[in-house]
Length: 203
Image 1 (tube, rainbow, N blue to C red):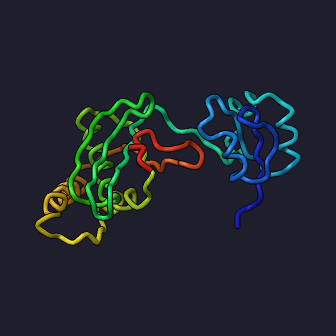
Image 2: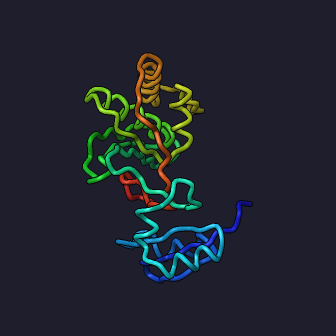
């Protein structure tokens, strides 16, 4: 188990000091303008709660014990949706700051992990074409690992019905094997930031 933390909420549905993220998140996630942060000790939390939130948001030292970070708005977020596993799958990429759709593909027969993988590679190719080094966010560690290894480690059987998605997988793997990129691929922290901006909203 990790060390115990104390969560200060300056602005939210309820303010105060909370002793678990499960309790804290109910008062801050999805709340416009919410301000919150974690601290290593109860004493630190009590001192921080008495002060203005801006002091802790804008002057946070680099070695801070904060549990929270913020996402880079100038980035691309990708996500996939799949009805069934396998099932009809689609993915899209959006500009994180505005939610504007930059690309969308599907639906075709596949799996959610394949969609997440193809979405990241599509974003990499899209950004390379534009000469952009923007970071890419995905909420799938599985897909991020596949991209890092340049191989989609899927168990999806290759059949007449899945041939189309398998061709896309192989094309994506070839792209990864033959292209270099400097874009960071980062994990979207859903528990801190809410659903990824490219989410299809079908949960």
